[in-house]
Image (spheres, rainbow, N blue to C red):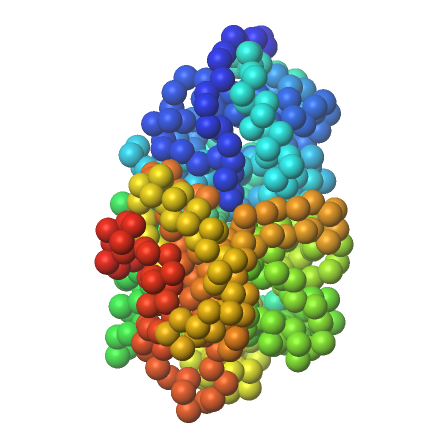
Length: 543
Ligand code: VG1
Ligand code: CO
């Protein structure tokens, strides 16, 4: 075994987006592509000698090959130890948990999250720092700069490590410890939630369907929900992680988790439905005949948090991404705690959590989490909901409706226009930014614009500024239209339009969402010229 220095040349475009570097599998399969990025990462970190790295992925196609490459490169950079999940598997929240628990320097997640997998699908890599959370923008930008100047990478020519056997192995001087991917995570969950109450709930006949979408969360859900909490065998469907996610799109929303939504609408529907995404950090909560919007879910968890043992002392504050509805703000106001508005992407929550400014965080994109790790956490959200239902009784729908009755309802929808031409998308955003000054004060189809801006965020902890985080039109009645371009796609551009309208009156809480938002949808198109510019008469995905 020797450490080799291999000459290389920069690949253009190795710039991490909202959540890591994501490209087509074929791009990652180019010789040197992954190596260049990992070398740029290690160069940016500086001295890694004697440190611990945590490594795992969502099991998608190319995961195992990439893990071996990272192991051999870590060995060449003097890491003392790498903790790697058995089979190369670690969900994103579990990796965050392991990094924190074992005091690692950081972790590498191999995942493209909710993007489809397989040879023609997507792959991705993300670096998490010692707090367990995604590296901040200043760091990922430094990695990107380094990737543009790279001339060589260092790698051991050692043999592949057997990822399927628990226990210790070696690569050069480095210890490789293959760990149970579930154990540390399950222990953390036991300390946060009332497992006895949830066990009693299942014991009393409560039924659940959890859709693992053939992605990473199946083994976690089976071990915890079926194994520890007594949900009947078979409650977790599509539980085995597959390299191509069974051909599905592991994005837990009503559009992509069709099987679950159909089950929850059937006459013999279980009491509770849930799904998670490729890397296990997203969640969708479904009741009989109702899919809970993620923004509502955050607000409901916040309002009821003290019913879960891990949050009995109450919340320091709540944070939500800017496009996430303001339902959580109403709860924060009622609790007299702060609600912080951040740009899209979990990396912006890390500083707030580390500083103890907030306890719960959420995004409209089916992401919810807390200070227990530094990532959003799909199964955690499911356990939180089960804990609430076990303590309070009643159904998902009843809990949601009671919440709306007390705080009002924020009708909410996201319209995605996927794979549009990047230049067209760029021009659309540019034109929107150009209109901002004129828009304030205008009345459009009955909505008067109170504020039109491009969201900019100053991190209250380190003072860093992130600008151009989404164009917002905020109406005098509090309704909002937000436009931004996705930072996780690998083909063309995706325009996301976020629509929100507040309704205080309980008698008006049961409209179909798209109908309730129809007026705003028309304004959104009129202002941005979506149909005219993109040629699309309708969004490709509506959630
Ligand atoms: C999307 C979501 C964002 C989320 C990100 C990563 O980003 O909108 O809220 O944090 O995915 O989620 P974008 O830039 O495409 O809108 V995941 O589950 O990929 O880690
Ligand atoms: Co994800």
